[in-house]
Structures are given as structure tokens and as C-alpha cells.
Amino acid sequence: MIYYAEDDKGIRDLVIYTLRNTGFDAEGFPCGTELINAVSQKLPELILLDIMMPGEDGIEILKRLRQSERTKDVPIIMVTAKSSEYDRIIGLDYGADDYISKPFGLMEMISRIKAVLRRSSSSSHGSSELSIGGIRLDVGTHKVLSEGKEVTLTLKEFNLLKLLISSHGAVLTRDLILDKIWGYDFDGETRTVDVHIRTLRSKLGSTGDMIETVRGVGYRIIEKN
Image (cartoon, rainbow, N blue to C red; front, top):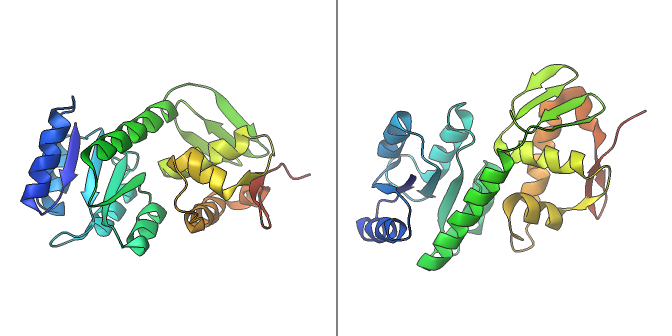
């Protein structure tokens, strides 16, 4: 099931029609309040969330969904105005999985949805454990321990930590991280990577300093002696 929150009825109806005719179950909502009510009843596979809506805007709804333990891992694609680069950056910083700019092609939208669902599915399977220093990461249960204490991470933060650990100390460029975690190069914009790294370090506490900044290149994680 895909939920789409959009106050423009014409756009909303067209998108829902297209989703249903390409094999998805889909429901549309004119505002964030109705979306939240629906999510409380049934979790969707993915949410399409317009930024400009009456009442709470899409960014505020995104923040609420990411702060809730029940909905923090639901894939979310933001729908933004074509010229609103700031909104796109903020949306990614708050945990959006992707964005689509208006006006958008319906087949592009379907392609983006399928890509996000594939990434979400691949990140939720498997049962292997990764570790470095005092960090333990269980891929199957999405549990992370730092010095024996459980750490609550968003899906993006979890996948970022997983990528760093599985790279065995190799330096990862910001563009590579964007491609692996967000699925595309965000027009050369790498600020969102820096924000996620900073938050990840903070949440990990004493083990966070294993994530090193390689000036002018990117990031790596290495065990401290």
C-alpha cells in the first residue's frame, strides 16, 4: 500500500490512478492530518508526501513520522516545487528517502518508487552481524550497540553506519555515499551526508570518533588503538 498526501485533488487523483494501474495499492489524502490518521490504522509500504499542504506542511509531517518508533523506517518520498532546493535539502536531512520535483513525469515517479522500495527491502533482509571496535550492528534486527548500549538510529543512519563498517576502513567519498544510501547524486549537494555523519557520531557517543573525516575526500571508520 502506498499513501499519497497532496492537497491538489487533480494531481492526487492522477497519481493514485497511475499507481493503481501499475500494480500498486494506493490511497490519497488531502492533508497531513488524514495521512497520520491512516498511518495509525495501517502502515503503508511507502509514503509520497507533498511539502506544501494546509495545516502542518510536509516537513513537519516527515519529522513526526521519523520521530515515531512505529513509522521511523517507512520509506518516504518528498514531493517538492521544482525550484525549492532548500526544501529538498531539509527533507533529506530529516530522513526522507528521496524527492520528486514538480512537475514530474508519472513514469519517473513510478521508477523512483520502485527504486526506494528495492533499497528498503534489501536493507531489511539478512541476519549477519557487523562490528568494529565497540560497535555491533545486526543487519537482520536493525539493532545497534555502542559499548554494549543500544542506540536508536533512523533507517538512513543505520544504512550509513552499515556502509562504513562494511567498507573495512576504506575512504568513501560523499558522492559515493549519496549514491549508495540515497540512490543518486543529489546535484553535487553533499551537505546532507555531513549532517547525517554528525548525527550518527553524536548518537554513537564514545565510539563515534571512529568515524573520521578525510579532508577534501569523504569519510571512513577505523578502530582506535
